Length: 70
Image 1: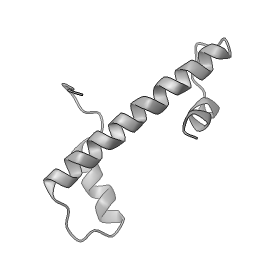
Image 2: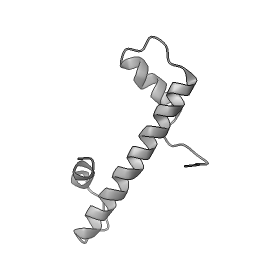
Image 3: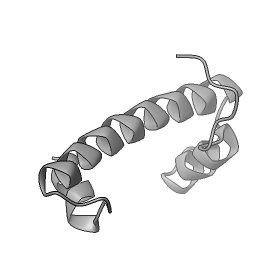
Image 4: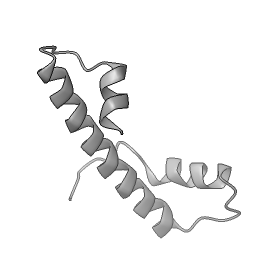
C-alpha cells in the first residue's frame, strides 16, 4: 500500500522499540513496524467510522475506537 506521507514515522517506532527494551533498532525494523502500525490504525479507523455511522453520528467517539479495536 503506497503512501506519499507516513503519519507514523519510523523514528517514532524506533523510540517505541527502544523504550520496550531493544538496545538497537535497524532502520528496516522501524520502517516495517511503522507500516504495520499504520495499516492497523487505518483498519481500526474504518471500523470506527462504520460504528459512528451506524449510530447516526458524524463524530467518531472514543468508544467507537475502543469497540473497533476489539
